Every structure is written in C-alpha cells, then in structure tokens.
Amino acid sequence: MTTLISTHDIACIVAERGLPEVLRRLVDCLEEDFGRWEEFEKVARVASHSPTGVIELMPVADAVDYSFKYVNGHPRNTALGLPTVMAFGVLADVATGIPRVLSELTLTTALRTAATSVMAAKRLARPGARSMALVGNGAQSEFQALAFHHLLGITTLRLFDTDAAATAKLQRHLRGVPGLRLVACADAAEALRGADIVTTITADKRNATIVTPEMVEPGMHFNAVGGDCPGKTELHPGVLQAARVFVEYEPQSRIEGDVQQMPADFPVTELWRVLAGRSPGRTGPAEVTVFDSVGFALEDFSALRLVAELARAAGLGEEIDLIPALGDPKDLYAALAGARPRQLRAA
Image (cartoon, rainbow, N blue to C red; front, top):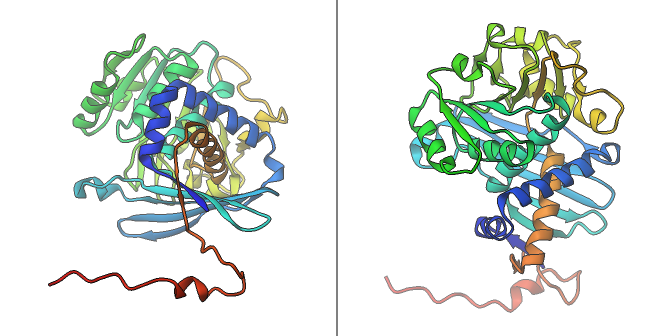
C-alpha cells in the first residue's frame, strides 16, 4: 500500500506541532541530507517550457530511497484563481521500486524553501541580523518571513511588491506576530535601505532587475529565491560581481539561477561545501553574500521523508492501493477479473 498525504494532513501537522517546530525539523533534515551530499545520485531537473509557464520533474536518490517532485510555475495562474506553483511528490523504495509515499508538495514546497533559506542564512548572513527586506509578497512570502523571524531572530520586515494587495495580504497574516515589526515600502530601494538580509521572491517569468548595485550595502546577505528558470532573474549582474555567490547544485543553477547571466567561469560555491566545512561561508562583516536559490530535488527528498514521519506519528495519511495486490505477481490480468461495471446513472 501507498500512503497518501494530503494538503489537509500537512495543515493538521503544522497546527498540532506549530510552524516554528516544523520549520526547525525541516532545517535539521536538510542539514543532515546536505551533509551527505556525495551519497546522492543527482541530476538537474527536467523542464518543459511553454509560453505561459513551466512544468518540471525533480528526481534524486541515495542507496535506499528515491524521490521525485512534479512542480509547475505559471505566473498567470492567479488570474484564473489557481496557484502559481502546484506540486506533488513520491518517495519510493530503491530496492523494490514500491512508492511508499505520495504527498502533496505545494504547501510543503513553501515550507522547505523557507527552511532552505534559513539553512543558508545561518552560514552566510551577518551574526545578529535583525532586519530583512522582503521584495515579492506573494504566495511564499509568509513562509519566508516567519521562518526568518522564528529561526533566525529577524524582528523587522521591510515589505515591497508591485501589487499593493499582495503586501496588504502579507501584513494581514503577520499582524499580531509577537516581536515582528512590519514596514511597507514604496519601492524596492526603500525596502533594502538598512536591511541585513534581502529576500527576493518574485513570480514574473522574465529577466527582471529587482536589485541594482547602488542598492547594495556592505554586509548584506541576499536570499535570491525568485530567479528559478531560464530567462527569469532578479539581480543585476553587478550585484553578483560584487558578492560571493552560493548555489545548491551548480549544473542546475547555471541554467536557471541568477548566475545564468554570468560567464561560465564565474565563481560559485555549492552550499553543501560550506555545511561540510570544505569552503568558508561569510568571511567578514562587510562581505556581501548571495544565495542564488533555485530549489533542488534534495530539498524535496528531505521534506518528503520528514512529512512521512510526522504524518505517521500523528496517525494522518490514507492508505491507497496505488499498486495492485496480486496473489500471483506474474498474473497482472487477475486484478481486472474481480471488478464489476459500475451501475450507470439514468439519463
């Protein structure tokens, strides 16, 4: 049998355990899996692009577990009443191929992306960072804001979005969070002014310039989340040139990240090397750092194994017969033999 984990199940897990605890557990799982980076079979995600968006498959495996995520990115979906990003994933047994878990990953992707951002900022942001600019106040903004508040101690959020309604939505959700001050700004430049950390998480599928070199202040850490497919960027090349740049999986980031704008020999550091102590993170208080985050399959692997564990502990999830149960594994046709036609409704 396969365990189906629904969006309702994820919401129940967060409600019962609390968002800060779920995010902490996700960071722990991510750090554990990134710490054994070399044990995984890794490939860049497979993308199918169309004029309105992209559909992607993201596989990764170690010797025991295989996972993949199906995910889309369609910025125009909001006009249709649909999310920009929708996803589901599978966690399967390498030895037999049995899909043990089939889970929603729309909510979970937002959670794991925020946890990944925090994992990087722990090594790359200035110690004692308290102010964050959040440019792009759409579907994932609350997750980023609360992760940085609860896990990294951010107390001031400077907000900007070209859609004022998105900022109002974010303020509504975060109003009343103890110890969190919200500052709505007129433009990106105002939002960045004085910020220790800058999170860019815009949705438009285009080569945008959200941040220009003159907005950069010494010691800033950029958590660049929104540039995540070919032809979609957020940072001016001059911002990257003046910073040390960190990525998840270099072959994928060169195609999809903000570094797609840079020459092939532009230096980047894979984040796992920092976690493993093979490369330094931040080296000084005035250094500018960029985490050019596009989202990598290993993050979904970590998230899937955690939500499976939490769902099991909470008695959540539904057992479904995704794979037929056979008395004789060579007799697949027998799975059809016992079924009867459903009675058709009268016209």
